[in-house]
Structure formats: structure tokens, C-alpha cells
Amino acid sequence: MTKAFPVAAFVWMALAVWFWPAPASAHSLGVDKAELIETAPGAYELLSKVPPRLASAITTPVLPGQCTFEGSPRGERGAYHVLFRFTCETSLTSDDQLVLPWKRDGALLTVRWFEQEPLTRLATRQGDAIVVDLEEYLAGSGSIVKAATRYTKLGFEHILEGLDHLLFVFALMIVVRNGWRLVKTITAFTIAHSITLALATLGYVNLPSAPVEATIALSIVFLCVEIVHAARGQISLTYRYPWIVAFAFGLLHGLGFAGALSEIGLPPNEIPIALLFFNIGVELGQLAFVSVILIALNLLAALRFRFPRWAELVPTYVIGTLAMYWTLERTAAIAGL
Image (cartoon, rainbow, N blue to C red; front, side, top):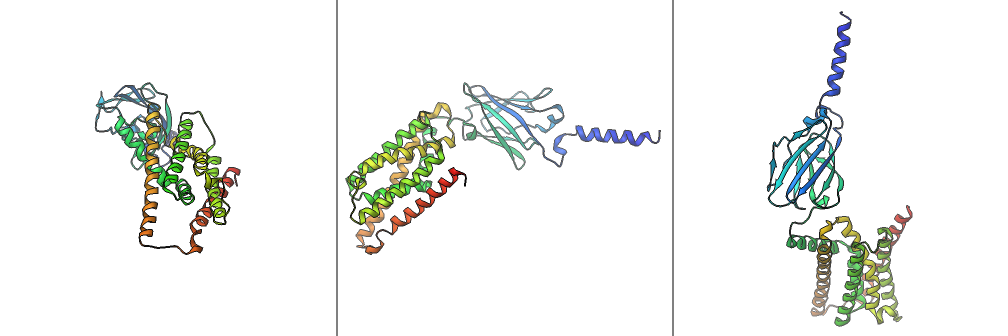
């Protein structure tokens, strides 16, 4: 009997460790599958799929302010799941978050918005909770006004952060210095990238992003070479008909804009409004950039400041060098170097 006791104690200790809830473990807490289902507009079910020994780790979620639980906030606890039901005065939108104070490392969450296809992504632990940012799960904007504001802002920010697109526009401004010709050239560029942005977003055109980005950089190099040739008296098609060149390369730049928009992700029911207002945001950002350059040039002219002749091509060489670096870098990335 004296020898059997330590063996029995050891067995009981091993079983206690095995069945002890995962939160007490010093090791990885694990990732479970979960679902957020919009059963009707404003009505939701949040389902965590866990075995019974982990059910205690699934605690009450923190809902957005406009939402309340249906039934117990502790959820309905079945053999292999914990289910929370809640309703919201207004449907969940991209501005909302769900905070899950679950004692787990994350949740492989599938979201099924009402009458839409499901989307699965990993929601990871941030501090003491798993934070689900619903914008990452293609939640809607909530209203046309909010959608318009959201995508206009995204388009505006994208063009101002897209240095390659801005440098292409700047190079066009060096080529075209006449006011009316500049308007026609920028308009041609705008129309062209609007066409390919729409076609790519709607799925009619599908090109890999890496070659597109490399070719966009090469388009800037092309313009810089044309500017240098013109300074040496070699006037080409680019200078005679700049709107044609702007339109041709604008088609390419539109594919780049589409790639950025697809990375953001679009709720299916917001694609038309997203296309329209993202493009408006891009144009506003582009106009802001052109306006700043023109204002700066007019101020220099008012001050009667003139660059030395040797410095006139310095901006072109700087832009061309940077664009050539991007071309080589992006081409190497395609080749896997």
C-alpha cells in the first residue's frame, strides 16, 4: 500500500495538469475557431468552438456601445462550443471593434455578414484580449455618407503616400509648362487611370502587382529621359502630344491604384461607391499636389528668382535616378533576387 500511494498521486497530478484550463499554462494558449454570423440586419451570433476543458477560457465579450446581449452574457455553453447572441441598434460597421477577453492566443474568425460570402482571418491577442477590428473583415461603412467619406480619405491618402505616382505627375509638369496643355495632359492621365482602376476592381483585368509596380517606375524613367533629350534639342512625341503619353501610362498607373484598393478590401455591396469616391480622393490629392507645385513656381517667379542654367535638369536627374533604383529593385523582387 505504501508503494501504491506515490503512483496514484502521480497519476492524479498528471490528470490534473492535462485537464487544467489552458489559461493556467505558461506555454502557448492556443488558437481556436470562431464565427461571427449576422443572422439578420442588426442580429448576431458569436460562436467559439472549444472543447469542454477550455470553455472557462471563453469569457464575456465586450460589445460596441450600441449592442446588447440576448440571453446570458456568459453565453450558451454546449459540449464543444460557447455561443453568444446579441443585437445592435445599428448594424456593425467598419468603425466597430469586438474585444474578446478570452484567455487564448487568438481566434481563427470567420465572419458571415447578412446575405454575403464568409471571410476568414486570424484575430490575434493584443495585451489582455483578442481585438477584432471589423474593418479588416469587410464590414460596411454604415451609410452612403460614411462610405463616401471613408473612400475619399483613403484615395487622398494613397496618392499623397504614393511617391512614384506623384513623381510621374511632377515629370509631366516639367514636360508641359503651358496652362491649357497641362490641363489636357492631367485630364488624360486622370481618365486613363480611372478606366483601369474600375476594370481591375470589378475583375475584368487582373495583372500581378509586382510587374505593374516595376513598369510604373520605368514610366517615370521614360519621362526623365524624354526631358533630357528635349533639353538637347531632340523634341519627341512626348512633347508634341503629351496627353497621349499621359493617357497610355495612366492606364498602367490605374492598375497600381487598383492594387492598393484591393489590399484595403471592399465590402461587396460597396464596390461602386468605393470606386467612385476612392477615385475622387485620388484626384483631390493629385490636384493638391499640382497646386502646391504651381504656387511655389509662381512665388519664385514673383520674386524673380531664376535657377542657374546648369541646375535646370537637376530635378529631372534626381527623379530619374530614384525611379531607376525603384525599377531595378522591383524587377529584382520579381526575379526573386
